[in-house]
Length: 49
View 1 (cartoon, rainbow, N blue to C red):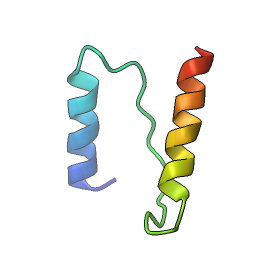
View 2: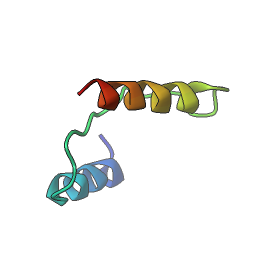
View 3: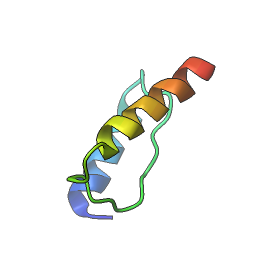
View 4: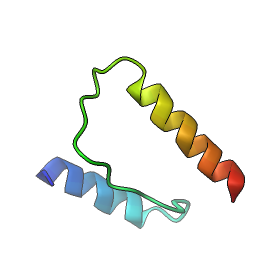
């Protein structure tokens, strides 16, 4: 994990409103539709709780 990613994760863990943080595998974020699919899945997981 890069230094900036570790710093961001540490900041998330310090926030009192963060329920869950998941470290994702390395992905090609320029792939069309990938970000939308992940955000949709996250919304579905949140709604199921």
